[in-house]
Length: 202
Image 1 (cartoon, helix red, strand yellow):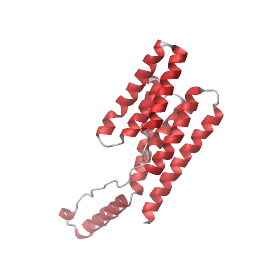
Image 2 (spheres, rainbow, N blue to C red):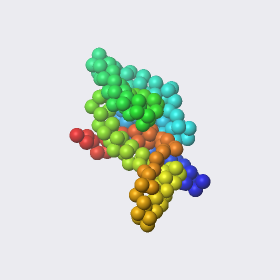
Image 3 (cartoon, one colour):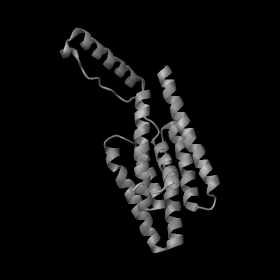
Image 4 (cartoon, rainbow, N blue to C red):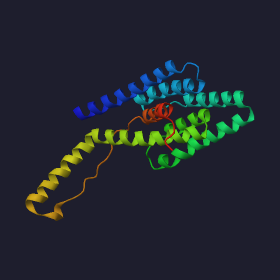
């Protein structure tokens, strides 16, 4: 029970942190439509993903419409190409992780929606940041899982037994399973914030 509480506390703390950062970016960049739209969207999906493990399609569709509309207004026909390409890149980058079970469909659509707003280049850079951040968060949440901690304790107990008895055939690697899904919307949000602050990785 304590492990579950620790997992949930970490989940809520990271979600709240992402939401606070989104509000700070809105406050700091009041005239940048791209940052305003992206930060508002990230605030909403971090809230719903943290609380309900869900990213509503209505939020994602709204950002896609905003992205297409704004890019067409400021660039005309090239704006359509810009948004379509960005959306396609966002979908393509997370398609393989989705089919491997690493994330939900809502996460894939969230990056695609950001792509429709920000275009392919920025979307790729956000993907790189969120990959690094998501990997660290995934490892942290995995270690906080009660099943993982139980399996690790069993693993070290088995190692100790093998060392004392010299019965190497009794050693079995643990099957560590992740019981809880962490809200990947936070990784997407932190990736966007990192890109906005520090620029391109490559």
